[in-house]
Amino acid sequence: MDTKFHKDFKSCPACGSTNRFFESMANELKDRGVVRKEWAFYLDIKQGVVMDKVKEQRLIIGSQVPAYTYATDICMDCGCVYAMFIERSNATKSIEPATNMPGPPLGQVIRSS
Image (cartoon, rainbow, N blue to C red):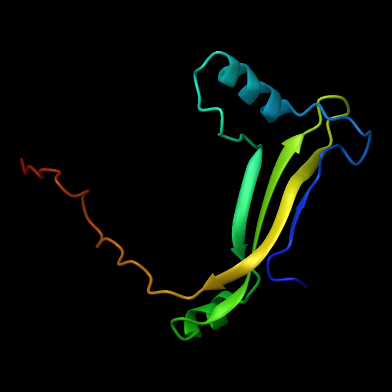
């Protein structure tokens, strides 16, 4: 598969409609000037890698693995949830950011009674 694969789906695969629920709401907000014109709205968007999490943790920093992104919306005519686009790319293993230690959020004052 091409490492830069991208495919858009312009209409509902079930009924052929181009009326999308979240896209429609976003267009209303764009027309009112409430959100930026370049913003896209989806029911859901997912990103990740296709890999066993245990093996992913063992990868050498700088290693590349296949990654995916897809976004979905709902057809306003038949209710079908479908992908608006699917995309394949490569993700590069990097150093994971440090996680906070257990305890109160930073800056929170702890008072004893």
